[in-house]
Amino acid sequence: MKIKQKRKLLSYIDVIDYPIKFNPFVFSRSFLMWALLGLIGGTIAGVYWISLNFLTHSLAFFKGWQVIPLMSICGLLAGLVIHFIGDPGEIHLIVNNIRFKKGKLDPKNNPSMILSSLLCVASGGSLGPEAPLVQVTGSTGTWLGKLLRLKGEELRSFSIAGMASGFTALFGAPLGGSLFSLEILHHKHAVEYYKAIIPAFVASCFSYLVFAVIIHLGLGPIWDLSAYEYAGIFDFGYAVLFALVGAAFGWLFIWCTKTFKLLFEVKDLPIYLKTMIGGLILGIIAYFYPITRYFGHHEVNELLHQDYALNTLIIILILKIVAIAITVTSGWRGGFIIPLFFVGTSLGLILHQLFPFINLSLAIVSCMAAINSCVTRTPMSTTILLATLTGFGHFIPIFFASLTGYFLAPKIPFISSQMDGK
Image (cartoon, rainbow, N blue to C red; front, side, top):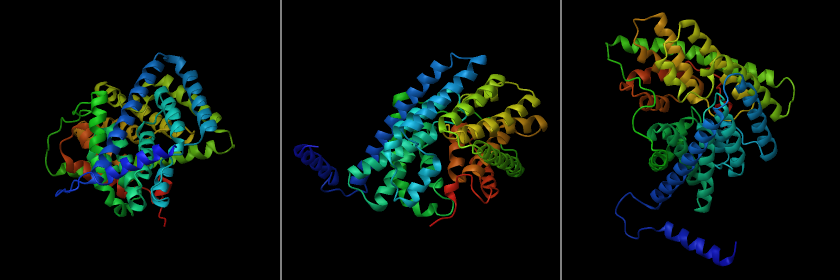
C-alpha cells in the first residue's frame, strides 16, 4: 500500500475514533463500529442467500434417480474445494478461536467455506447455511476490528458481534441470534462473554435490516404453529414430557453421529472421497424419501401440511437423523440447527398421531426446543428463535422444554470445544 493511501486510511480511522466531539448520549464511536459491522454482515448474508437460492433452484432440476449422481458429484467437488483451497473447519473451531485465540477468526478460509457450503447445501445436504454464515461474518468482524485497531476484549466482542449478525440475518431474530452467538461458546463460561451482548444486539439489528431489504424478508413466522390455546397448568407438564422424548432423540442423534464418525475414520481417506461417499448415501436416502433432502427450511412446512401416515413419519424421522449424521461426519459443510428443528417437527407429529388428544403445536415446538438444546446447549436462544420462527406466542412452555433438553444433555457435549477448558 502506498504511503498516501496509508495516510488517508489513518485519517479516516481517526474520524471514526472521534465521530462527535460533544455527545451527551450513550451513542458513541463504538455504536458506529457495531452498526457498520452489522451492515456488512447483512450484506454478506444477503448475497450468500441469493447465491444459495439460485444454485438450489438450478440443481432442483435433477429429480428421481438423478439426485444420486448429483449429490455424489457435488460432494466430490466440495471435497476438492476443501482439499485444494483449505479446510475451513467446523463450529468447534469457531468456539475454540473465540475462547483461546482472543476472538480472532481467520478470514483466509472464507472462500473455501463459501464455495463448499454452497455446493453442500444447494445440492440437498442435511445441513443449513447458518454455520457458514456465522464463520464468514465472524471472521469479517475480526478483519474489520483489526482495521479499526481493536485489541483484546474489544476485538473478541467484535468477532462475536459479527457472528451474531450472520446468524440473525438467516433466522430473522436479532435477540435470539445475539444470544446464540454467546451461548454456543461455552455452557459454563458464557457469562464472561456477555460484555459482547450490546455489540451483538446492535450488529444484529443492522444486519437484519439490510438482509430484509435485500431479500424482501417479511416479519411473519416461517413455520406457523400459532394455533395453540392455553388449556391449563398441565400444559407445562406436557411440555416437559414432550421435551423428555425430544432429549432422548437428541441422545440418539449424538450417538448416531459418533457411530458414523468412527466408520468414516476406519480408513484414512482423502476428504474428497469422504464427501463423495457421503453424497452417494445422501442421494440414495433422498431418492426413496425426497422430503429428507435439503436442510428443512421449506420441508418443515411440507411436513406440517401433508397428512403422512404414522409409519411414514417414523421412517422420515429415522432417515433424517441418519442423513444429518452422515452430512456432519463425511465432511460436508453447514449447520445442523434447522435440520434438528425438522427432526423435532417429525417427532411432534408422531406423538400427536399416537396420542391425538395432545395439542399438536405444543408437541412440535417442545420437541424442537428440547432436541436442539440437548445437542447445542443453547436453551435461551433456542427459546427465542422458536418463538420467532413458529409464531408460538406462549413463551414459557418453550422455555420449559428448552431447559429440560439442556439439563438432560450428555455430560460430554456434542460440540467438543464446549468441554471445560482454561
